[in-house]
Image (tube, rainbow over all chains, first blue to last red; front, side, top):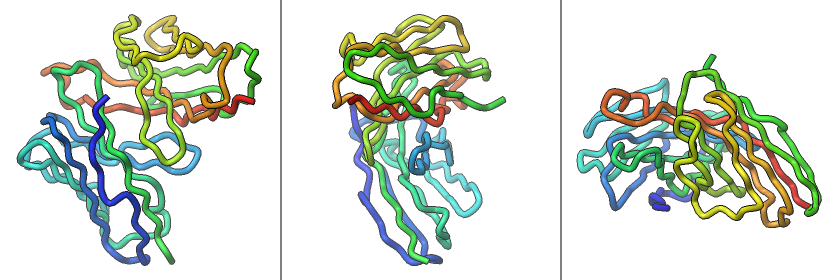
Length: 112
Length: 118
């Protein structure tokens, strides 16, 4: 199935720094999702976006639905050690039924 | 109740064994999914059930056999697996897509079943 391009692939940052990652697709979506996955666990939904241009926050996390509907961005401000994990984007277009397409993931390491 | 529950958490099996993974949700979702995930990779879709009927099979080998006994339960029957089938198996559920439910188009995942095939 289609895979979304997510970058960067990995990040090593100091505690307190801000983080930015993005996801791009060759197809348009009408839903963008951002998940975090910790070792041995399933992905947990962080933010859902439903409208082009939408900017949504969840605590220190902010995500945006790109205006072209082919990309999305996730920012984490003032990172802390518990932000460590792999972040996945996912896109959905209702005309494709139940298909959700996942990004390749961004592995985040926070150095205390 | 906003959980997807998967059992067992860990499973070790030989290549000749028959075992099953189980998944349960009580969110009223009518779509349920099986994903396979290798380390540090995104989840790969295996099967989708919509209204308890198989709607998507991503060319998965027949040694994996899904079953959806009712709207809350999803099983994955395993038989004659190979060592390369070792992975984290994730169950997920969602509302069915459509204009009315567009804001509900999110996947809710379980914690996964870690499978090791010896």
